[in-house]
Amino acid sequence: MGRLINAPSNSFCDGMKLGRDFTNLLYFDYLGKKEEQDLRDGKIGVHDVDAIVQEIAKADIAGQVAAAKRIGIGHVELDGAVPNPYLSFTKEQRDEAKSAAKKAGIDLSFHLPYTYVCGSTCAPHETDRAAAVALQKEYIAFASDIGCNYVNMHPGVVPFYHAMGKYFDLIRASLVKSMIELGEVAKDEKVILHLENNTAFDGCFYEPEELVSVVEEVRRRGVELYFNLDIGHWFTRADVGKPLPNPPEDIVKVIPDGMFKEIHLNDYVPGKRIFHPPLHTQVGPLKATNLVRLADMLRQKGAELILLETAFREKEQVLDRDNIMKEEAQYVKNIFGI
Image (spheres, rainbow, N blue to C red):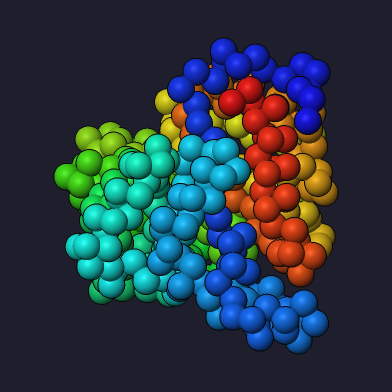
């Protein structure tokens, strides 16, 4: 694939890396013969594949590392969304995962779980909040054990009637308290903690400015924390009556310098509610010209890791998975000059 006109030069991305959270991209490889045929025949859907094999696929960290090597990217973010097998890993399994990544020259990070118990990190009820934080601490320790350099988390979810007025003040205070606790643990475990914006469907903390203010307050308390902008998550605001600006990537301009290390790069199709389509298909707001501008703005803001978060929704995508991953990675490399 040829280089895009007006794309940044390679020099702008000194130190910047391209990574991927494989989400469900590799799940097909873990199906049995019958299940594989059932998918081909339309008897089960992609969401069924996720339910059948995701714990097995997530456990194969060496397999994810090998896939990253195969498609030419240098970083893997492990998906801790539940269900996952990670807290049951033995010391031997943790050492093997760390060794596999080191031998392959692949850096690791970890996406902390964000639903069920772990979705209560901003809960106004202290018992719930403390339980969520205690569980997240275990995952941070796991990430440290296997050699991750970053960990990333969502701020939590709330009922819609808690996302306004005095209730919002309560959940924000709870989130600040949780991030201080988790940031201190992250420092002890020698990993860097990031806070990522929700989708609009989570009911709270989907506007970047809300998370930036939390990060700034946590930093004022002497705890290191960074903001992970997920621009695809932010695009979901279009489906709750809040339009996107033109061009939509201008949201980056409102974020202060020094907030970024890791960035999640994905798209979203408003109206159809399609999450994380392959970027090179350009079916969402992020066309190639938008990505060129986004790349330049992220450079100016000091981003270090561009983390792809594509997910498959269609059988045809699953069956063409390797080509899609390679084409998308090359497309982004061409634009970002990585």
